[in-house]
Length: 244
Length: 244
Image 1 (cartoon, each protein chain N blue to C red):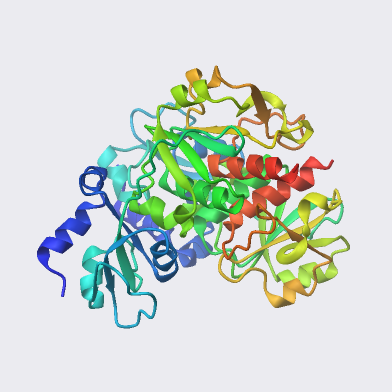
Image 2 (cartoon, rainbow over the protein chains, first blue to last red):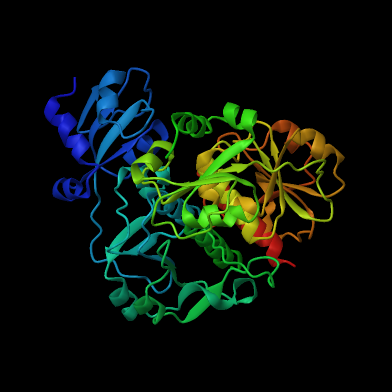
């Protein structure tokens, strides 16, 4: 049985303010929840009678579908909802030997979740995000990561400061960049992806060592169009990994 | 002033049944609407006083924001909504000389819209979709295409039949495929992308000439994860275009 206080607490976790106060966030669905249970401390677990997965949590409780609906953020609630403790990553800096993603003001939760999945697939372990980037513990981001949030660490930092002190090549995508298909790409470095509407900020652009262009086709066709930022991330990261 | 009958008609266009009966569909927002006006017949156009774009339509009318809210499918209505006539493309078959996309049961409107944008960027003019693929005139798909729907033609067909009679290589992505980064890809052919949960159907898989794998990284790391279908489409199409 779910208490009113618990329902209120869980619903408050849709707001960043309460997530930061409590250090808690929610995730839903069998695959996502079980995947994350292996990596994060499970504070509360609520499941309906048809849930057959892992039930190990500090507090776990079978609930009715109607109760689950009261705490779920999904249009069609699945059979389990977990409240996890946010992990604390201390003193992480960009590793110049690794390939790293930096995000400069990504706003859309779906894009953020997709980018985390891309990082997971391509073995990028750390993402550095500017402080105005959407919060990864936003329930929509968590769901869009499909569990990849467990394996990819996202750090919110002063991006200009971090990029200033890293000793590795910094790449951005830009319409006046060099054709990525013809560039020799390094094994390490930082790939910066920018905001959906405005791209990479001027301060960050000024720190870039190399501008890359994903060419449209045919190359001579003028286009006012753009690629979605998560799609562009996928193409760029895939190109870096393909050259190894 | 919007009549009750018009409000009802426009709201019905959220349903495929009414779109098919009337041959009409809606699009919203300045950029998307203006982009599409150049390609499709604009049956009705409703705009608020701050809309400064093209107003040429069979019937166009200034409305209040409250009126626009009654017909909009967006959480925050923009300043224009258009009702377009669906184009009719007759007797189109897969051109064996072109690079073509085929979609086998894509269900998610956001994925479909993103795939159409990818096709537009990479100069793929025709997409052939199985009949159980989400309808491109679904308002969520239209919005996600950001206007690209104007330039990319989508044909709903019996996919097995179409693929059976095309004289060009047919590519699918599969976990037991060959590393796409090491394959020599043809300039023409059909790239088939499958349903979000189930991938490409068995009948279509049986027609494939070549299976391609987008390798995860590091390659030896076992992963139970997957890439989103629109992300996979972007990587594959980009690879095909990069080899030209």
